[in-house]
Length: 121
Image (cartoon, rainbow, N blue to C red; front, side, top):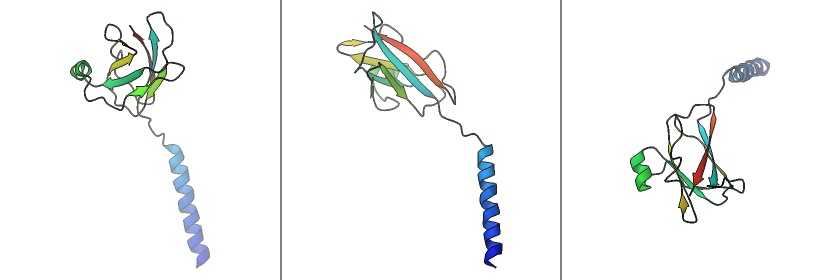
């Protein structure tokens, strides 16, 4: 009796593992931002936020996620995003990107990490 239950359990576990390996899980879009000043120098310690609309960007209200701070390489990464275009605001030491790049060039895609360089002035 125990042997039969064990065989059924083993077959079930094997099928579960086999089927799990057949399906690829999608990864939500990601966005990597590198911040540079007007000379192209990397800016560490800048704060970046994403917004879904230009109105939210203009008012700096309702960011998609919490503000992120760039690392020593001037980069910050946002994960688990929607497949849409985002408005980006970056600020550091009295400078921002309000006269430069303010949005992604198109909608983000599943299973991809999009990259953009933002210049602050």
